[in-house]
Length: 54
Image 1 (tube, rainbow, N blue to C red):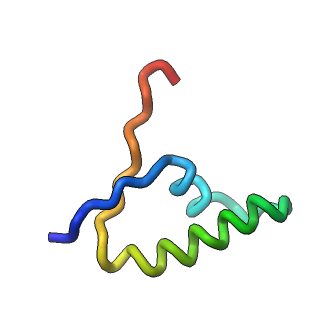
Image 2: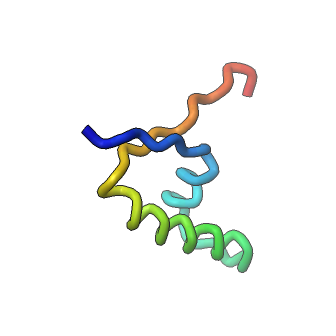
């Protein structure tokens, strides 16, 4: 069983969204993709639960 890795929802958002034209957001997306490749084999990612008030 892999250890679980808590992910903030913004990380998941950067991972699954279309490439942005905004250079800052595109950098965040690229960093997230690189991180995901390194972590996905060693951890079981799980996103935070949405707050009922959101």
